[in-house]
Structures are given as C-alpha cells and as structure tokens.
Image 1 (cartoon, helix red, strand yellow):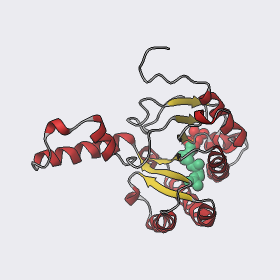
Image 2: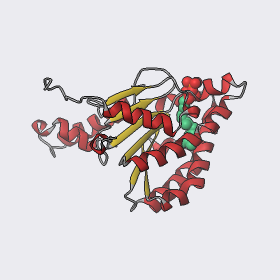
Image 3: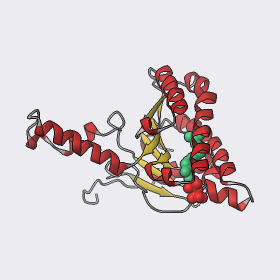
Image 4: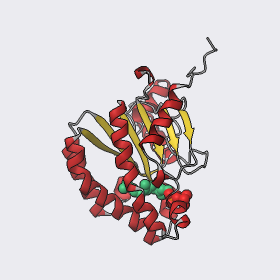
Length: 237
Ligand code: FPP
C-alpha cells in the first residue's frame, strides 16, 4: 500500500453489538462485552499502519436514553477497559484523550479516565480519543455560546469569527479532521458524530457487526480509502 495514502485520522462508529448478541441468543450486555476486543485489535492495526489519530464513538448523548442497566454496563466495560489497558497504552506509546460531556459520567469512570489521561499525556505514537457522552450538536452549541459570550463581553469583534475560529474552539481542536470515517453494523448515517469535522472525510460503511470487526476488516477500509480521489470541492484533474 502506498504510504502516502494512509489516513492521518480514522474515526469509527462502532455499531452492531446488540444485533451480534441477538443472533447468538445472548444479552445485549454480552454484545457490548464482545465489543471491547475489536478496540484492542483496531488500535494495534492502526498503529502498525501509521495512523496518528484514532477516534472512537463509545457513548453518544443519545445513548443516555437507553435502559439504565445497559448504560451502567457500558460504563463498567469502559472502566474495565481503561484499567486493563493502561499499561499496554504506556508500552505502545498511545496517548488517551476524551471528547464529550465527560463530567456527566459516573465518578468511578471519570477518576479512572483522569488517571490514564494524565499517565499517557506525553505519549506520542498515536492519540486514541474516546467520544463519551458526545454529541456534535452539543459541541457546536457550546462553541456558539463561547463565541457569543466573547463578543457580548467586548473581547472579540464579530468579523474575527471564521471557520478556523470555530475549529480552534471544538473539543477536537488538538486533532486533525478525520480523513476516514468507518461505520460498522450496516447503517449509513453520522448519528451526531463529528458533523463539522467530517466536511471532507471519506466514509466507509460495512455491514460487519462491531464485535466481528477485525484487523483484516480494518485493512480493507484502509485499502478502500487509498483508492479514493479526494478533491475537496475542486474540479477533476
Ligand atoms: C453500538 O451497538 C455500540 C455502542 C452503544 C457503544 C460502543 C460500545 C462498545 C464498543 C463496548 C465497549 C466499549 C468500551 C469503550 C470498552 P448497539 O448496541 O447500538 O448495537 P445494535 O445497533 O446492534 O443494537
């Protein structure tokens, strides 16, 4: 594969845990549990390929509407993942980040996250960003309010608000925009994920359910990406 065609930033909507479990006569919790392994696999494969940013949609603002038990299971799994992976993240030089309203998460999860965020902050091999209690519209609303407050306070002139100003305020400001967005589970929509950031992102949809997604599937997405011609609104060569 041509190295120049490796996406710098890959974002993933990990969908299909529930259906994966239902097909096996298992509970939804079992499906989510099985969803932790592909995260490990994809992280390794992304690092090996030279991807710089990997961003995973782990819990959306809309996911709060799921049954309380399921929400609890998701946070317990997240807690276990962070605890069990901390040393591996250090060993492989991965920096952990979060985007979203993390303050809405249970305290035990926030504490575990804080610890690993601090522990891995100097790592530079790959940045793994977990979107937690994340919604793109909430993020953009927050940016609008911040900018409006600066203007209202007389600290900013209206004309200084540009697309760049907005990008610099977003929770993703330390990341480049995604080059490739993968969604598993067969649906073809963004579901309130990185709406602003995906203006020129290439999309890759696969029917594979998230717990079945493996390194071979990830490489297939990279190969599809390498075959795309990105024109950014310009005319064909
Ligand atoms: C969608 O499956 C997935 C989620 C709601 C969140 C992703 C969660 C995991 C991958 C579990 C492990 C997470 C971490 C961070 C260790 P779904 O329930 O919507 O599936 P369905 O569409 O088949 O019902």
